[in-house]
Amino acid sequence: MTSVFEENSKVTVPHMINFTARPSILLDFRNENLKMDLYQGSDARLHKDDVDICFSKTLNSCKVPQIRYASVERLLERLTDLRFLSIDFLNTFLHTYRIFTTAAVVMDKLADIYKKPFTSIPVRSLELFFATNQNNRSGENVNDKSPRLCRKFSSPPPLSIPSRTSSPVRMRKLSLNSPISAKVLDLSGATSSSAASSPTSVFNPAVSPPPGSVQAVENSRCSVSPASAFAIATAAAGHSSPPGNMLSKTCQRTCDKEFIIRRAATNRVLNVLRHWVSKHSQDFEMNSELKTCVICLLEEVLRDPDLLPQERKATTNILSALSQDDQDDALLKIEDILQMAECPKAECFESLSAMDLAEQITLLDHIVFRSIPYEEFLGQGWMKNDKTERTPYIMKTSQHFNDMSNLVASQIMTHTDVGSRANSIEKWVAVADICRCLNNYNGVLEITSALNRSAIYRLKKTWAKVCKQTKALMDKLQKPVSSEGRFKNLRETLKNCNPPCVPYLGMYLTDLAFIEEGTPNFTEEGLVNFSKMRMISHIIREIRQFQQTPYRIEHQPKVTQYLMDKTLIMDEDTLYDLSLKIEPRLPA
Image (cartoon, rainbow, N blue to C red; front, side, top):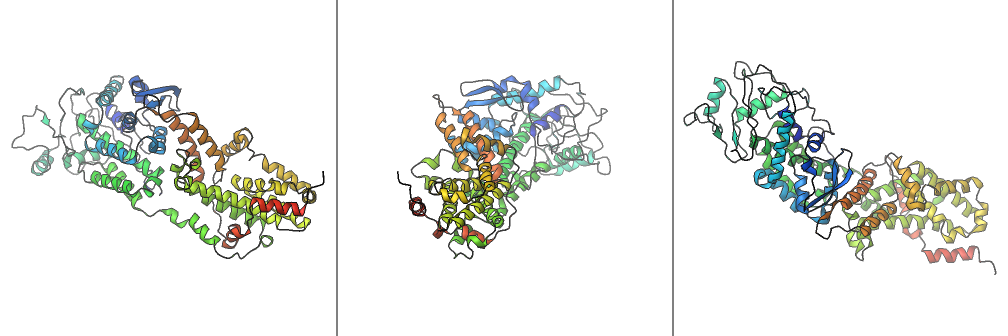
């Protein structure tokens, strides 16, 4: 599932609020790096330790503390905190939430934030949210008489700036203790009559209070008339005014507390869902109930008559991405490979070129590698007694590695002539070198590990026939995939490697096992060890980086049928017995 809506759906609420407070700033909502750094840095209470949350002294790339421990409730609160936005936190949470909660709980929280923001968002978050907004206003030399409009989120043309000659508006201090209220845009006569006759209009002229009074806003999402919403959206997008003087007066709206929080809550939910659907699509492919739940919530969002155009577009794009067919269907899958293995082989080793073998080995290795869902990397399922049920794709990847390595060793041992065995070794080393050039380090290790097996390594007469160049190349190939220093060389190689690439999965499984065994998931107080979750997430992120970039290699069924033919494979005991027959042990 691809992020077809990525560019048009980056709605960042904190900057909407910031724009409301400082209209001199032009915003570009297409920028991925827009964060709440200003707010995080200006309010230390956002990162203050408490009984149910503890922060690390280490700062992230945005120079703010990272969560060390936290309760599940505080993590869910941070996920939906209107002041807080961190891609690292979002990825860590979505990669590891299965360890400490469920997808249903996460969706319930998002639904509550959208439907009941005032009761679902903690009071402390709302207080700090508005306190930060007020602090940023007082620190800026801006025209307090210019309108504070909650704008439509728009890409270019840039947001229009109200004129300093706008009619004065008294700025109302935002306080949680004051009643929630709103003022409707002061439109011209044509607009007023339209609003009066509209069934969805906020004001009823017959019962409207005097001009100075404040109209109470009912506690529902539909708190703005269509005419008002259109005026706001038009002013924000920089559209020209319609004919006549309907919008001749400058659009004005007091920064109403309810309006801001509802818009902020809606956009936070959309941002989380957008990232979840686009970057973690496996969750929805493997959980139909979760997919249905998200679709129902998004359809409810679309029914909101006051939804801003950019919000509506973002919601539609998320729904489109959830509903579209998986584009990976066009790619070869592991099930297709297993079916090919049952077909009779059409080629033999001698008739296949080293290039064809290397390319098809790389294609097969990457298909098997990319099929692993990231949830299998949680909880060391590959080391449990029921590992086949808990981590079937990791087990298939491990079995595929062993089968390929056994095929290399078996093919060499089928030759009774010493010269033929030497030629086979030279050809397999050439295949491994091409795999290295293709960034298939898993394939390099499959072949080099086969050549280092005792059944083949002990064949001194055979190795004596192998040319020096091949032996030197063999030594060169073994260095980047050596297990010394916890695969130090391979890690360095992968850092400088551009995908597509097939890393050795065993290296990552070793790292994950080290993390799982070294630190608990929860503290003695029952808090989630989020530092551990972050370490696990970083490893999963690196794995997925290599999973998501496919090779552009044309599939050759005849070659893959040979590579997947298990009738050619000998077990370890058979290989060693055959090795003893070829070159018996020397008498002591």
